[in-house]
Length: 297
Image 1 (cartoon, rainbow, N blue to C red):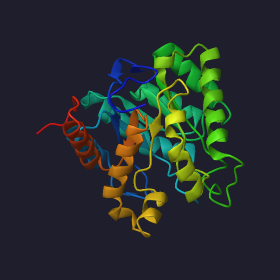
Image 2 (image 1 turned 180 degrees about the vertical axis):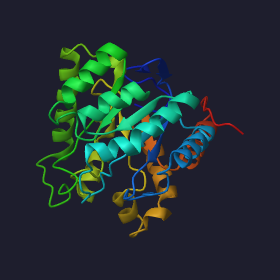
Image 3 (image 1 turned 90 degrees about the vertical axis):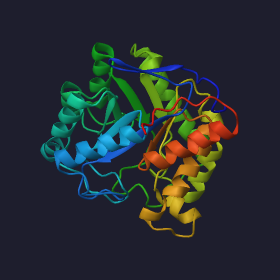
Image 4 (image 1 turned 30 degrees about the vertical axis):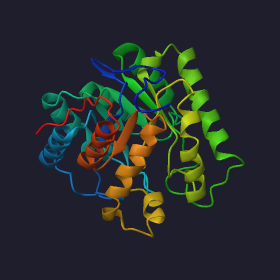
């Protein structure tokens, strides 16, 4: 599946928003945590977060993903009340101003419900909606409010996921998990246009696992639901560039995002929106394909 073709689902519906998936869409990352591996502490105040989100939309972001609990390897869980305090005021402020879908990155069913009430239209769960109550919260939001769902594969938990992860066949096992999630949501009556699947690069996977999974992206893109891929600034990028530090991984991340899109990814979750947008725009221009990006001058 190339970038110029429509995915298995041509539209992503996030509440009142509808995003055509005939081109790769950019999801800008907005961390409101003190301990994110990449930009922890930078956007904790509501006005700081709002300004960063505005800038990402101006640079070409089609969606904004708000996270209040770091899921970096070794991260400790955050209490529900603290995650609420970090996330809900930001969602409310963004929903009042921005005309793009807002995603909340959480594993907690209580916060899923409250985030939707505050204005989120996509639930992004790195745990694949496996926590107690998360499945029910996700299905209810999808059915009753048209909220989109992104189910990601993770082996283990953030605190321990990078402690000797093991697979017999990582591509087959991740593909089976994503297929199971897709089929289970379909049985619950969740429309296909409200579902994204994420193979979970870096979540319970070694560098070798990540590379095998990246090579398997075309097959994963054929599972029947659009793929979201997030490799931005991750350790695999640093390792492949000779142990490059986090803040020097944006060029590599943009190239990896471009290659993921060529392999069939429909949504690219990134920190550097401008660089990713420009990489995609140049690809389309130099291959004489139509580019309908939204970057403002």
